[in-house]
Image (spheres, protein in one colour):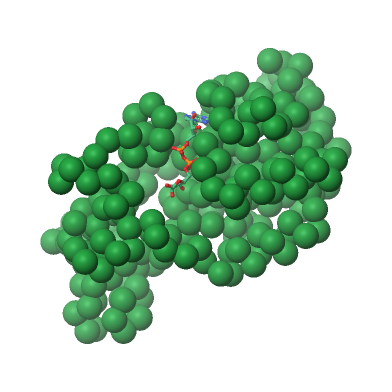
Length: 259
Ligand code: APR
C-alpha cells in the first residue's frame, strides 16, 4: 500500500490542477451514515415502508412535508451532532498547498467548509442544509438547530409557509450555479482527479474522472470497497479516507513521521 500511496502523492505533488471528488464515505469517519453499502441509509425502507429516496424527494416535500421533514431532520441532526475529521482537514491542507485544487462534494454536511476548504474552490453539487428558506415567500431562516427541536415541518415566521433546506432532494434539479462552475473548471482540464468515499452513482461524478483519464491525467480512488471507478483509475487505495488522506499529505509535505 505504501508504494501506491507514494505514487498518488507524487502525482499530486507534480500536479497543478487537482479535483478531489468526495462522497458520504469521507464523512462516515465522522460517524455519519453512508447512503449505500454496509449500513447505508438507502438499503432499507422507512418506517412507512417507503424507499428513502421517495421519502427524501421533492414531490414528497410538496405532498407530505411532515413525512419528508421527518427524514430531513434525521440527516440534519446527524450532521449537526458530528464534525469534520482528519480527512476533511487533509483535503483543506492540500487546497492551501495547491491554489488550483478544487473539491466537488456530494455531501450536504458542510464539513469541507468547517474544515477550512475555501468556499470559492468548493462545489457542493447536492447543496447544503442551511440556511432554510420559505417555499412560499422566500424568507431565509438561520435557525436549523432550533427548528429541529420544534414540531415539524418548520414554518416561516413571516407567512407561515413550509421551510426547506437548500439541498437537492430526489427528483429535483442540481443547482445551476454549481453545475456551471463544475463544467467551467472541467473545460480547463485537471492533471489529477482523486475520488474519496463515493460509489460514483451519478454521471456528473463519473464524467470528471473519465475526461481526465482520456486526456492523459492521473486518477485515483480512496475507498475500502471496490466501486464503478475502481477498474478505471490508475490507483485504487483500498482503505479509509481518515487513514489514507493524512498519509498522502505527509508524503506531499515530506513529513517523515506520517510516512
Ligand atoms: N473511507 C472512504 N470510503 C468509505 C468509508 C471510509 N471510511 N466508509 C465507506 N466508504 C465508501 C463506501 O464503500 C461507498 O463506496 O463510501 C461510499 C459511500 O457511498 P454512498 O453511500 O453511495 O454515498 P455517495 O457515493 O456519496 O452517494 C452519492 O447519492 O443519494 C445520493 O445525495 C446522495 O450525495 C449522495 C449521493
